[in-house]
View 1 (cartoon, rainbow, N blue to C red):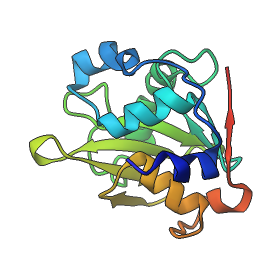
View 2: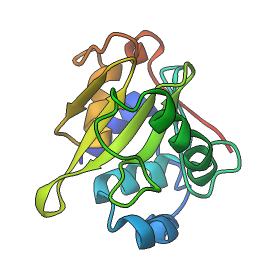
View 3: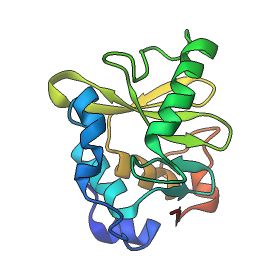
Length: 162
């Protein structure tokens, strides 16, 4: 994971929202999720990055990961089945949605070989990155990774919810 000072400069101080055990129920179905992702979201909690990207959490009343997955997974597979190249959880082996945008785009954790993970993003087209969730978010907010359709660098920062 990035140094805490870099994350705090970009997202503010972590607020200790939960422990990493908050994902146990989900991991019973998906297998272990990336620790750097869980540590980041457990520390900062659910919230909005750059005024645009909603980061989900399994214990959030507002940005609940389970409710979002239940509502959105069937829609992604129905509306854009050819554009999203893999099944979406709760399908077996499906990618796990960890964030969504104000416009209905989604970010997924994509399992790789030997316990590795990538970030998959549907923002009217599919793209993947081999990096951590905190690093990927940080690079966008800092303007070092510019993704058309995901204007996280414009507003920057992190606004917690719940």
